[in-house]
Image 1 (cartoon, rainbow, N blue to C red):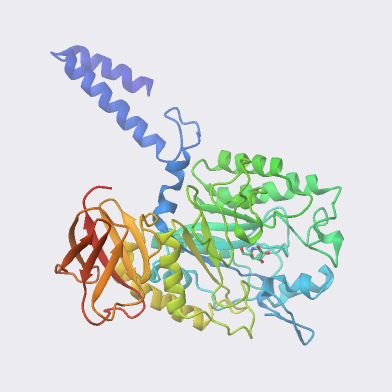
Image 2 (cartoon, helix red, strand yellow):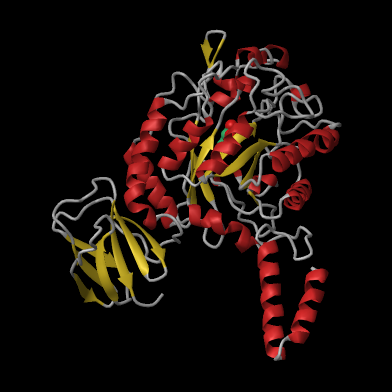
Length: 474
Ligand code: FHN
């Protein structure tokens, strides 16, 4: 930088007017700063944390991600020694009281020859998904990447011997999807973590005297591998934080550790103790580590005003694959959830649980395809939107952008009159988002807070038709 500036001074001294020199120097500095800071590095090349808003922008705009729970548990697929487990598939080691000595041999059977990273990422992209969160390591401790700190990983322990995360990283880069990792703090396989608690792997009261050694010599080095060799990552999605040995101070330390490795990464609130069970966000006023709240299998009734949050959900009743769980949510239900969550200012992280062959189950693929067809027409009403400024609306949901309201109409008015209450702004124009010609719909103001939009007799989309109101002011 200094050489360039001194050359500039020589050049400037030949310029007739000092104003030209000032303009050139200023322009050069602006380019230098812009060029460096985009990756969270200072103009001097040091890594410096970006502001939270800078880090969160792509994530807030994305609104829709895909969760992938995949690992050894896909092999038993919810059944152990002929007995079906009564819970989520990825918990089979704990639910069926399987000792590590009997669970580890599953590695010999994990050979997902039909796995195709481009295909998985394509399914996600066509669904309108903007980021993928995959389990690098779930509670069972098995690693989906080539880790240098253990052989309990896909390269060293299985016949498959391909680095799943490396292949997904390449496919995501190629298709413009952000790659993110779910990583479990709780580890049922590592002797310095919960392994000694067998068969009570999830005993939140027990403590391992060597847990600090697990964090320093295993958990942190593995996270460094994941952030350094597969990145830049979008999100580090921690989980399994509820154990006794993990504390909020450790969460804060981990948050800083991860940000130091990649300044613009985003981290969920399960890095610390800020998750209040499945609600996803503690309501006490303590400052918890992490960037967003994580309600699970639920949508906060009024969102979580003023904070970033993401609802994660299964399409059936399990995260990890179970051969017999056919209790699939309908496409209509999933599309309504997508709009509901966005209308409350949240992100939707929708899960798939691939099987042991490396295939995403058919019913999941069908639903994602149908969601993608709706998103191709209506994604403007989801991406980059903010929570509804209207109160509850009887016919559906509402999302917003500056100067625009997107009315997600689930229940089409039988009289072709769509009533919008709580709206004082002047409506400049109304039209169907799906109508490329944006033919005007007539709007009549009934009173200070209510307008009535005349809509077609039939709902163009039986699940969710979006009517756009262009309005004046905020
Ligand atoms: O125990 C895990 C569970 O297996 C799954 O990964 C969910 C997904 O968010 N998280 C934990 C339960 O809260």
